[in-house]
Image 1: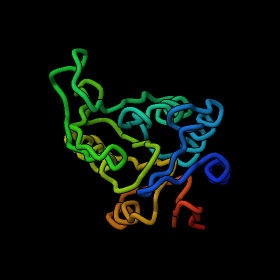
Image 2: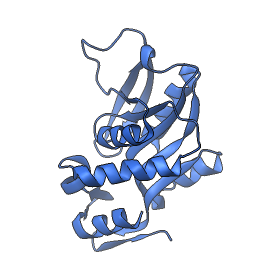
Image 3: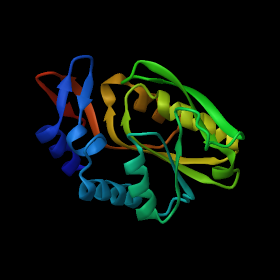
Image 4: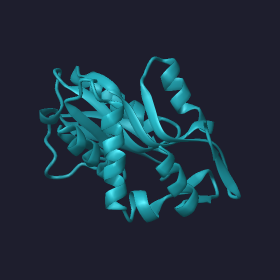
Length: 190
């Protein structure tokens, strides 16, 4: 998605440790119109693919998942990182290590929101090491649901997780795929 690449170049900032800060438009302050464009692009990419639910992990992926869900006319579900009083006792869980926060979370989705008849599209803001994607894939498998694919806003291709998933036969569509990234700049895969 050329518009996303251009926005990353204009507004993104590479921080030490291979961190790309896109908080001005994607995950702290959100450019609402642009988020909806991303959702529409995801819907376009998955037109004709059976999708009954969109799944993400809280919190940065929620806006993108909702935008995709709206564009596809399906519910969006998010895995919670922390247990809360309003989370059902009947849950699917997976352990996920967060590259950004350097912490392991046990993500959980209430069983009432994901089932064997579902065709699930994973949507997330970043694909770096693939831990969140693999955790969501584990939950989808545990539910007996079908994985429709993974739609990612920004993939750090140089970390290899997306290529490993693709080699395993998982459909991964990244709207901006970064091949290299340093504090002085970044390059996108053609």
